[in-house]
Image (cartoon, rainbow, N blue to C red):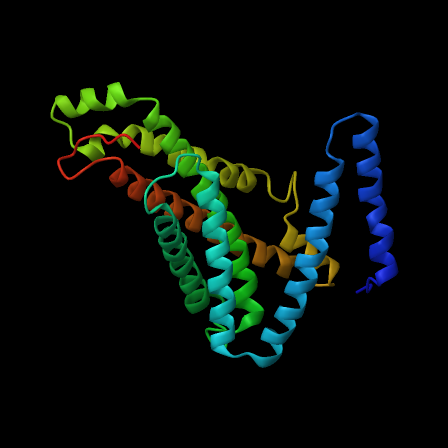
Amino acid sequence: MIQLTIIDIAMALGLIAIAIGLSAWQKLGLEWQLLIATIRTIVQLIFVGYVLEIVFDNKQPWLVVAMITIMLTVASVVARNRISKKIPRLLPLVWVSILTSTVLSISYTNLLVIQPETWYEPQYLIPLVGIVLGNAMNTAALAGERLVSTINSSPVEIETYLSLGATSQQAVAKYRKDAVRAALIPTLNLMMVVGIVTLPGIFTGQLLTGVNPLNAVAYQILIMFLLAFTNLVTSLLITYGLCRQFFNQDAQLKNL
């Protein structure tokens, strides 16, 4: 594998410099955003690199769990912030939804597919959890925002269903299904074109490190199935929890 030096990374910054120049030329106003995003990318990845080096060298379960907990919490906060309406107790709901889907999918993968020597093997656990959390975060945000906006714009229709004898879950079942389907669109689209139109990051990364292409393909297939399951479970859990938040104990629609 060709090792990249600091000079090589500095040369790569030329791409950002060109992008900033193009933004200024076209008067897009993105110069500061590009600069800040570039600085954050460098600082965050260097920091994570050093942390992962410590975790990988020590291989202590508490270190692995602590890092995953931090990653989970950050992902939950970001997903919560992307849902425009501030629902009560939204952060715990998002946190539990993402945690549940991640534990189910990673446990299945570790126990039945990869089967590492120890369940907390950081070489496998942390990268897989990172991929799953990133996707679950986006899925929770998409499903939650779609459901909240739809319910808030359809109170009359929902109350009509309730007045005709429908339960609270029946009254919003259509909106919940639409939210889940919308949240799964990016995942399904990726699965439809993976390997033909796009090469995912982990697949490309393995190829760059010299891994046999067929072995890289096997891991990418595993990851695609892992993401499909995780994202579906996450969207189902977050929409179910949100639907319950919109009704009181008497199954009446609340104004949130």
